[in-house]
Image (tube, rainbow, N blue to C red; front, side):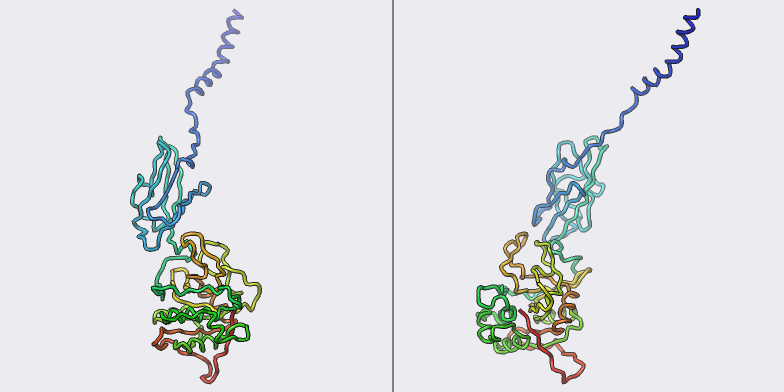
Length: 357
């Protein structure tokens, strides 16, 4: 009898453990985390300028398209691992769909059972934004010609390292007069300056010698002077200390300086041929003669880096204020500059000269 009671007690003691074990075997196991990073095999936008980049660490996709494209209507193409689904901004999508990419887009990958998802942010930029021009264009104007007039001052001649003045003058005259065929070497020969830097007065004299009219304006407001001059069909030449202009270390971008300037007093001439005003900055569209054979390798492959360079107005303001706070306004051949009016404290105060290399 005592043996039966012992067996019964032992059975009752083990019953809860047996029951717990039985319940555990019936419980649903937690879903395993499934990585969808490798399920996105390819991504592209029709007409993209370079291959889209898929960042599986920060879960971002970046693409670049021409600025002329309608960002509200871009065709997106993608390929996925079998069984993977996609949503664009929470709407089911298939490759070849036309979507609005004017703002960052949520591109969500879904597992076959739709229980697991992975979201990528898609950023589509224009070529200008890729080049470093921030914001969206509000207004712009470029005084381009149907022919080339950009010149690299590094032409192999004796004074190439300090020939920014003769080179900018030659570019300005080529723009003003399509029949002009002389070179920076010709300009240096005409005004030798004993093998030294050219002065602002040399530029004015050389342009006048080639029947190109100029005027001088103060750069109290860089954006206003440039915009007014360009809109009136006139180029602008500035003389500044390039040491004060920030360098951009991103080789593929077209904004700010692309070369080293060792110390203050690095005088230089730039030719302003346009502007781009965005909701972020005012950019001067510039021909900088100091390319030294350096070229872009992405999108504008083979283009010299001094051609169509964009400098922010406040950096130009700072660099001209400490060097030469004026601008030479250049008109097309046969025309007279009418948009410029010198503003000095004294009408009899002469405009000082400055030089650049």
